[in-house]
Image (cartoon, rainbow, N blue to C red; front, side, top):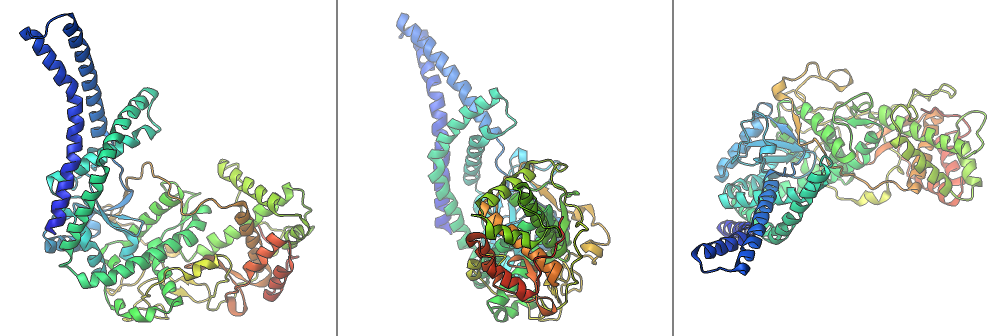
Length: 628
């Protein structure tokens, strides 16, 4: 521990020496001007040549000093990057704050000044003592305060209290080295340089200010390049010292908890890219992502037959019980995740509404399929493809691909149509109205245990990282309570967005209300607030879909609509693969052969494999489907 701390302090001094050298370079012309002026006063440096040198050097010194003052002011005033987080007040999580403070006391380090959550599978300390980051009237982050502890929100829902404490131990231990004056000063200097380098990219700067910001940014970039290696080694030393100090606290449990970290990351990635992203594209945002990741990890564990080996975890208290209102926190982090990974609006509205897991199949999956099917038929109309008299049918699509030379024209037209809809104002975009009335209503969905159809997700992901489960086959804990959303028979959906804890209350701390709401709003002191989210960077989960991928998605959507409307199939939700189609007797078994039929139609213009699949599920392609 001492060696890591000494190395960190040595590197911090090296970073500060970079600042000292820059200051020395700025003062060098002034020092030379003082020497020349002193020589003139004493009579040792007289003559026209020395007079000219005095004027030139003095002018250069003034210019350099003014420039140095300007660059220093820019670096000092530049706003360092602030991670967008959900602030958790102590009144909203007294047990969590108590656990962190007890952990800091055991480690003999200062306790973090505050706690915040991020929609990511990571945890770290963040210094928010810059004047631009201080909360108005806030008392927990004055200058010189301890850093803020940022915790990945999926950890709170997936991990037990003991596991979370073990995972946070090396993070909290980092407050010790962070309190050293040299390390704190070096970090502030590096953050200021980094902010100054990024300053010219701000869109609100005028031409004159942008020119000055570029000059200051160039100087800051030189100093940052000189200090980068020392700063990196300083952080490694801090991490090493924190890790050594944390070995005295829950070391054995931390090894087990690290397995849960990897498992949580795998489930969170699948949930965002397969389940949340389709909803975000439809203008809806799942409001219980953290509760959903538990169901995703449970399904991942069940598929890999690992759940039985980890049933001992079920008797322990889940970490989300450390929050007074987990449901409110989950909703806030879910909205922040939508803004970070999709660029959604900051506030819910008519075109950006929350959706709970119970309504996901109807409000997201079915709507997604029918919107894409409608887009496919609009593009066919614009290309002059003959429409069937009955209305929009799958037969029209099959006939087009069987007679067309290739699908590149249709794929390009779909890409252009989607781009036009994304650029157009809401009023000009094709309205997502209720289903048209020229098609028969869908057959009632049978109710039986679900088994979603394969083909809506790449098969290559079947071998991704898996991990332990935490529920039995009935979705209940070993103590008989339901820790997380248990599947609803016949739909594959969760019975509730919260969970029942050992205290007999739901995980969101409230009784369920119709539509997934709550009976009464929480007190303002318990409501989480998103901080650092004024100008969020967009971190897309996936690259833009190619024309061929768009074409496959739209044809698959049309196939699903035909199966739902003519064969009694139903939209469903698979926690790992997202939107799926439930078909078969009793309402749902997974068919793994729909994707090859769609690909054969698109790539080989061969409709027979898809026609065979449709016949096997009882779908009638000649019947019209409902569109939006």
